[in-house]
Image (tube, rainbow, N blue to C red; front, side, top):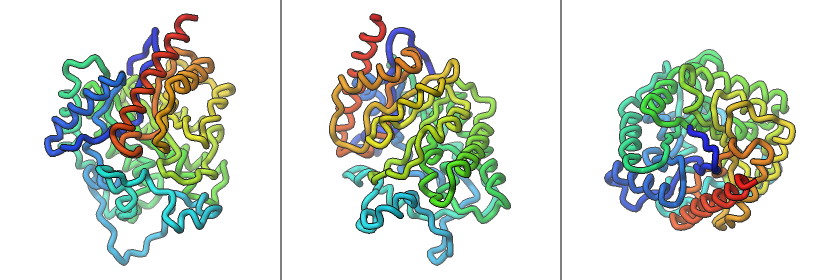
Length: 374
């Protein structure tokens, strides 16, 4: 991903508002890419228009899996397990959903509940799908002065939505996923696009295992990073960005793992840019981590400076202040303005999301003017 020497670049974590008419996907991608450029986003994507949710994404692109039988006896998995212990009434009454199932928003909660079972060797079967994604994105970039990226999911996050009934160990399963996903990662970067690795479960998986200690979880997460780096082998780091967060659910998040406990693991990923949730009330104080942790040489930080958990449009001055705060810690040339999670599918509707994006671009302009005049 290009680095700027005279201003803070602007990007985002993934989803953009979906056009009302998506029957012609190439045209819809062109529309959403053009709109991103118009509001001031420098590194744009396809809005994830071809991806409705993790379950469908995995089913479309991996072989060796099948829907679980209705009566299958599978161990329960709760992505809010730690918070559930403390706030049972909140979750019992339907709290903690992903987004708010707005009109036009994919039905993520019900889709996440569909259980998929690994029935044989994991293979990659999404060659045609990723080729279409690449072609649509490349075409949409024509004539625009912006850079493009496409997101793909990390092996460790894929793992959480599959029940392994084939591989003898978690490690064998993870590295099989890594080998399969390598094809998609390389197809994106070979086409000259940047690759965003979506790994929300790298920090968020902590919630799923309420009996693990921090040390146990650090070891658990480190193995997932080793698998991810295996999947990224041979791909130039300058084309790779990593996005992590604590999940897009609108629950309390009181029992999220703290960034200081996971930052060293995150920075082991062989990426140039690290996109980290930083605007929501549970984690916005964690800029302090970078008072003690040095960003590796040549790497960039993309903190979330606007959030998905509120329909309030952040003020550009506040966004600028957040960016300046990070610039003072890691260097102004190493900061990219980003979002906590995918905003487009999680706030009320398109007009709110686009207003948030525009505010982020304006905040980056304010911050850049102040930082580069020093």
